Image (cartoon, rainbow, N blue to C red):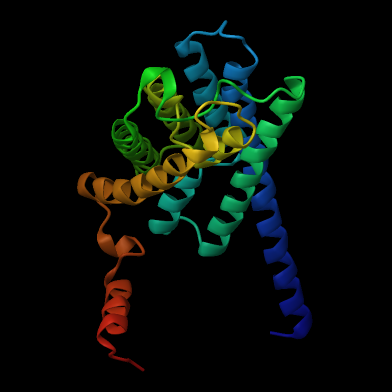
Length: 256
């Protein structure tokens, strides 16, 4: 390959990564504006069903029209099953975190620069004081949500169908979680809202659970998906090569 061809390939890769970041940022911003915005700007006028539909429809539109998964735990799961490359995953995460913060910042401005008293996540939400209950719920429903996404993809559904099923699942999960912890299952959304929150206790002090647990759920969901799908462990990054390399590192063995 000539130097000019190499430069062209590098430029194309950089353009692809930048487009990936921008797409995820826009999609995640939309999810935050629609979902968190329904809580922050409606002054309680929307029911839990209405808020859940806002979250679910926004995600469905992000996946089906914008082309963004708009959720860091989805990206991790897709990386594990080799649907995307590590470079694409990094671009996703940068865009999603940026989108979560940007969406919350826009709501902060629209809300007359008033910090959020609603739309955030926490284990003291609506009287719940047990972090264990909240983390268990985030884990279980996070697994369900990721399994729906992976199963929709593996069954060869159209992009529209994948968007509809995943968005529908997200609406259901949000509806169930709203009164428990404010409706999490999306680290980017949780982080963005927490930064602009004004709650007691401080949402930023609890947001770690809504970042860590969904990412753990993404890993667990892959193994649940493998148990119900025709895919095998070799189809994921946890194939024998990875396991052998890890064993070699632990034992000190080296291979050429």
